[in-house]
Length: 289
Length: 239
Image (cartoon, rainbow over all chains, first blue to last red; front, side, top):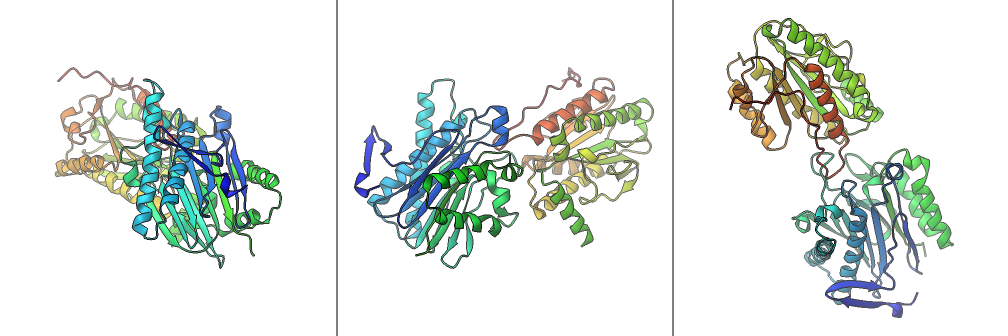
């Protein structure tokens, strides 16, 4: 793909981003983006409990690259308890990426405070879009019906910025192979408490981490994979989970085959034995030069 | 140390999130005869009902504290009748391994002390969960009594229960049997009025409790589980 292919459209004050906003629809959303410097694979796979209950995959993810070279990743987990959360997660991802794309082409934050402002704006735009969508959905719909988490990552040279709302997580690897948890799940005290973009105070609850590091690999995921990927209660990355995946993302030559393999992995019995929830994994890797 | 290792094994074997419930049962002398017999039948019913849901039975953890003369925790992990220390590491058992005790009634009604121990037990149990990285739901205290507290200082404990419930630390349910003083029970909660048991419908009560805990233990993030209707309570027309 050529950078000159990028096009931005603004329609009635809401952002639409085309043609390379990589977002597809449920139950399986995945796209491969290949680039000379970074490889990106992402997949969202319906959980076994959703499969048996006839509930669609409520996770969504999207990835795009800006002309300046920054990578934007968004992952959202629609609430199992909300009737139209698959729409909520898809809208959140699309709008968050659009807002980030527009903002980060206009400005290049260097200070941590500036990154926080960018993330607040991005989550604010995504939330406003859900409010607007609710209004358009008719009287029976409430904002709560579209409840979703959202996690957004910006990968810029020397900097990783992650905005977090909810129980997703992100793990980054530096040039020497060290793994760091770039976003840990936000939790209330109780197992059935959660943070969603539809909450009134959502934007204030966003936690933004700005990490100065040369990222060699990054994983962004929903809580479906939490128990496989992070050690609890410390939330340290579980290296035997991430190392093979990070090797995998940079090893494949064939984009379609890599997509299929990641999807198969997420749907495999050994993953499903540990979680019955939807699961999303977006992997970014920089091949060794 | 050995205790900590056993605890780790317990949670490694069953990493499901937990919903702890303390059954705070009046075994004072006034419960003697039919009430205690019906309560015992109710506990057996609870055991059966909890086991019918395999997932909930791994998530709901039960401790039984009785107050008749003295305050005791019962070893409901084995036969249910042996007294054990009121201790967060030992007092709880998941519903799949629960052994309903056969209670007998005698002595006075140290309800305040019993409630105080229940609060401490739940606070300590949460620490055990945190230490082991196990998620948990808001725990319950479920008090059943036919009398009035006979210990001094119960009013202060009632305030502590209210405070704990106010900061969402626990849910408190009180059930009055026969001649229980409902006004006293009302002192323990600002969130909900105590309920008066219809006759000695303990079995119905415990079926409801089982259904309610099952709903809570399976509630998903962002969800408040709706509880089933309370068919076992009398409609209170006294005020």
